[in-house]
Image 1 (tube, rainbow, N blue to C red):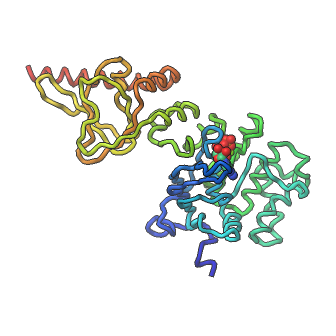
Image 2 (image 1 turned 90 degrees about the vertical axis):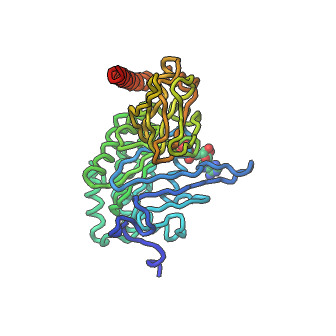
Image 3 (image 1 turned 60 degrees about the vertical axis):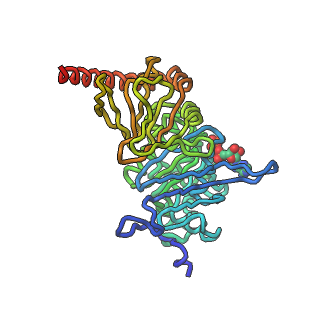
Length: 391
Ligand SMILES: Nc1ncnc2c1ncn2[C@@H]1O[C@H](COP(=O)(O)OP(=O)(O)OP(=O)(O)O)[C@@H](O)[C@H]1O
Ligand SMILES: [Mg+2]
């Protein structure tokens, strides 16, 4: 009976590439809202979060303290439930499980690692690693000890297997916590600041262990971290800003920004949608905003003095425009329109915000400047072509 209600088993894709609920990604969060009731009234800490993570990805979750990272992660582990929205992990609708179903599903499908290892203090390390197998009745009882020792061996802790957690260092305890998370060989590991209480060298070795689990054991990992150097080594980062996920195309357009800058930029952005073919900026107008394309494509036109208009470029999601006029403090050097076949969504920074961003981030300014030089050279070449053909 239970089997028909939800799946205990490992996620399996259908032939058409989707999971049981039509979800195409191993982890899918759809329009997640989380509101906590407090004495002062409701506080909404997740404001409509959409996330997709594919099998084999190593995703870092970053953001300022209080932005909602742990709340977000707790939606996936089922430690907490969304007020509305859906959490789909493989074939399971996590938000719909009862507590009992949740515990079994979690034990078989997720490895969870916290900042403070949470090993049981009265059990030896090897007994701690055996615990999830006992709890979920995975592997034959006679095999569990050997398997636990093998897992401890993978994290270089087998020689300490019979010690109590209090007898090992923080880094060693965290390695044991990772071995414990791997006990039932779950496809997904979820970690909330697993290196948060470790010194940087130990943090590095724990992180290397995660990298190995992705590359050699094909695990999928979501890891909250405050360490931007470690986050850069993941396959991508999800940036949480005020209970929302920063637009991935904005982070792609401005890849060198730190968490504080990205948080600030996200708060300044103004979103606008344009109909197919609509004009976004006109050549000759004063430059007042910088645009990043978040959906659809735009075309760039140069107007020749005789009224002729030529397309010089086409930009897509994650590319930007408007920097030329702003960096030179002048007018628009080209006209930009939504491509004729699609609606376009852009986010814009005003002049002041753009200027502040450029003054705070050398790498971003240099990257933008390089693109600007290329575009100016392109426009100059097209202008001289036009002049030649018109002679
Ligand atoms: N049970 C709760 N009741 C009320 N508010 C809560 C509760 N849990 C979290 N919050 C609030 O939700 C917001 C997000 O908290 P969360 O713990 O997700 O942040 P975080 O990004 O993980 O921060 P940190 O980096 O400090 O761990 C915070 O403002 C926090 O005070
Ligand atoms: Mg947290």
